[in-house]
Length: 453
Image 1 (cartoon, rainbow, N blue to C red):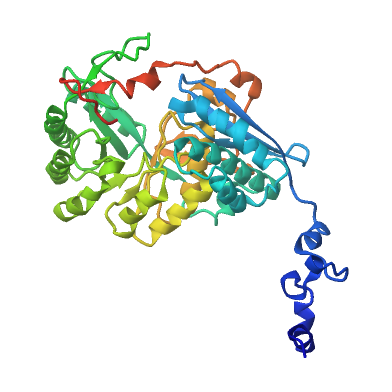
Image 2 (cartoon, rainbow, N blue to C red):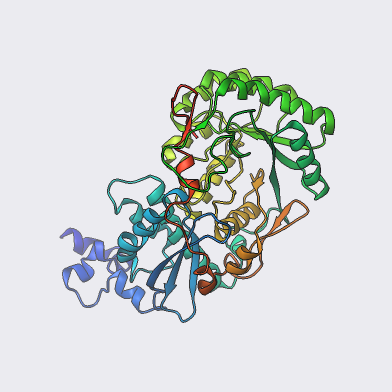
């Protein structure tokens, strides 16, 4: 008896005969056995991607990139954030010239498959341009799924784990008193977590503006912002001491080192502020220097946040798996959108690492809405960086997340609950050469050595 005849004679035979990889099915030209694709075609017609559009707009003078995915179901489309503000045109090109032709006609409900196939479609992968282009499409597909299901996104992600999303704001100033005043202002508005940053006299400091060139409205690739790590590292512990002495232990204080000091100096700084009990110290090392986390973890109990510049999973997996950080700080559009972010959050849960998604002005309101929906649904949420949207942003993006009493509240409308006014967005055109782009590459030490942002 041939193997195929024996198989048909068994109890499994009737089932096996319908499987093309066992019976030969459509591959063998047998009419009685339809292929999987043919069987699927007999059900609900697939929801096809019919167009992909990219919008660049700057209602808050920061270049934002938003992707719109349109389907064959009338009126059904989704929005996603693809904002890489320093390379907005490159992301636009990646979406329009490369991803769009690859996506047209695909089933919009196959979100993970589209992510995986798009990720490898360029062969050489990773990087912020591809990551943001992927994110714009990915978030839009999730938005479509929520709209089609008539459910807010957080429900599709498993439902609420909390009623609102606790946030932190930035208290910055040229002096300690300026910072103290800003902290008091945010406390009066209901915030419990506040990031403190202070200028170093005579130098440019991240988060507070620069002393050299910061007010120059004419961008120049020859401008220089001077910054030295030593004075900065000596100033920060004094800033913490001042704020703690004035405001006590009720407020949770955060600080962003932003990878700007040599690793050995960063370790000393993190240890110096430990007695002031910061909520976390962010980015003590650059992605190139993450190996130092093993040493730092052994020397301090200060909570550590890391990941704003990560785009390759190989960069953050060891930090999470070895419990070397306490908060993951990724920019969701940088790593490819909601599909990847929800996997990262789930992975972090097993190692007691909490989420603290990147959320400054160079995340579009669509990206903020994605952050908030994911924050509501993951059990290991930590804190969310927040910002107020100006009136222009609220007009261009109806349905922005609501910020009240220090909490973000998500819209209960289907999907992300946010929309885009395309005509109004066009009234805030993106400049080709904003000063914001150039200053990241003009920060140098006194001797001319470039400083990492």
